[in-house]
Image (cartoon, rainbow, N blue to C red; front, side):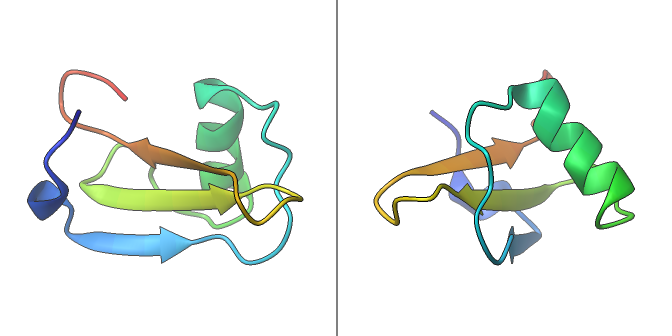
Amino acid sequence: MFDLTKAERIYIAVGYSDLRHGIDGFAAIIQNTFHMNPQTRNLYIFCGRKADRIKVLFWDNDGY
């Protein structure tokens, strides 16, 4: 588990995200679509088609 207080900002991707993506897929979305660096202290939240499922990407200097 990670410490949420380490996150500088929280970004929520609006709309449907394909939750079959892995870490590399979501990191590519952050880079190519949002033009941001996924290896920062930001928390990125992606929601699936069903609103009860999410995936969170967070870089903690040791990995995601």
